[in-house]
Every structure is written in structure tokens, then in C-alpha cells.
Length: 315
Image (tube, rainbow, N blue to C red; front, side, top):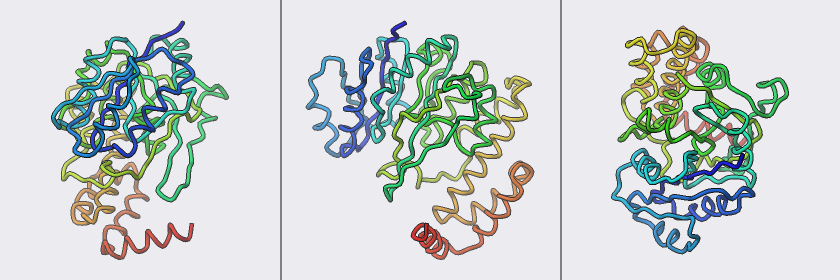
């Protein structure tokens, strides 16, 4: 079956990268798509870049700056096809991404979330990817039995935001991405899907995920729990987490709390990190890593940055 895709790219001050993202869509071997680019009030040359395209499958939307969640939601609300694929403006796809995504949907038509593995591109030019040959007994495609457990065990989602697709009816059912959320708005949405729907995954890396680009959220911190942690905690309190996932959801919450500690240390917010480290959920689920982060939290930030750079140069 030939599925059709509505591809959504939210764009905010990524003029340097948007051509790469758009061209990766136009160069797909599978061509059944429309592309919606939502310019979220960019102040750089993003508008000039996107206005150069004349392909009638591309729709450009301009809005005042309201954040990435609203940009994605507004783009999806304009979609004409039922399969929604999202791509960040500073990432790009390999040419066979949509073809494999189409195959994945045909294999698992009742899934609520589809993901494809990615390459990690680092600032120093290094490229790596996570090997998932063990996940589906040698198969390239499969259903992830417990997304929350895999997420917490790996210390990351098996796929990035730019490697996801979902049916538009799931988006409407759950209300889409949460407006105003700056960090983990993507994993928050995935987890809400995974509670009650199957998650299908393709293990070959076909997404290029760039870790160090301007205006990303990796160096940003808010002094509160990540949205995904808050959502999952609230769902647990309301008894809305299926019994089979309760243990793994709790473990994922602990992992997200630990991730917040790590981000706090990386941004020099050691006092906040040390306060969060005494959360019993973190200590009980990650005792050794907690001790390591406790030590890092006690090191002055300037010393920590020096040691981090030194280790990077050695490696």
C-alpha cells in the first residue's frame, strides 16, 4: 500500500540549516508527500531561504513566535494526509527514510507511533549510531514491547523527534504537543501515545540528528521537572498508567530526573543539581550513577568544563 505523508518542519532561526532539511525531503526515493514549513517568527534569514522554493507540494506558514509545540500543532492542523512525519529544521533524512517508513506502516498498520533509528552528528565531526540488532531477533522492523523500559535502559529514546511519524487521529485524540513546553515536549507526546498504542520501530539509521546547533535546547535549563516527568507522575496519580507499564514508567521518571541533574551540572547549576540528587527515585534506580553525579556536582563548574574539554581532546 502506498501511504501519503504530511511532513511538518517547525522553523525558528535555522536559516543556516533549513535548505539541508528541505532538500532531504525533496530528494526522497518515495515521493508521496506534502511538506509544511511553519516559520515561528524567525528573525534571521529563514524566510528568505524558504521563499525560494516553488514546489507546489510545499506549504509555507508564517506565525508570530509561539514556540516549537504550537508551530508543530499548527502545521499538523493544516495537513491533508493522515500520516504525520515530523522533521526538525536542523536535521535531515537519508533518501530512503519515507520508503522505509511506508514499509513500517504497512507491516504494523495498527501502531500509534512509528520511529526510525538515527545517526548522531557531533560538533567535532564524529558520527555514530546505536546498534539495535538485538532488539527484534535479527529483524529490521518490530514492535517495541515496553517503550518506557527501553527508554530508561538506553538512557535515551531509540529514535529522535525527526524520526517519528503518527496517525493524525492519534494527534487529535491526545491534543498534540503541549504548548509552552521548551524541553521534552517530544518525549512527552511519545509517552502519552505509548501508554495505549503500539510503538513500531525500524532499526537502520536513516535520520541525521545534529547535536550541536544554535538555538537547540541542550544548553537550556528550567528549574522544574521536565514535562515528560510531570505528565507521567500525574498519570500515575490518576491511575491512568496500565499495570504492565507502572514499574517501567517509574523507572523512566527516575531517568528523566537524573537527566535534569546532568543538564544542571553541564550548565553550572550545581546547587539545583545537588538538591535534585536526593530524590529517592533517582538513588534507588540509579545508585552508582547518582554517586558519580554527586561528585561532579561538588566540582566547581570551571573545573568541570576544563576536565570535560580535556577528556574530549584525549578521545
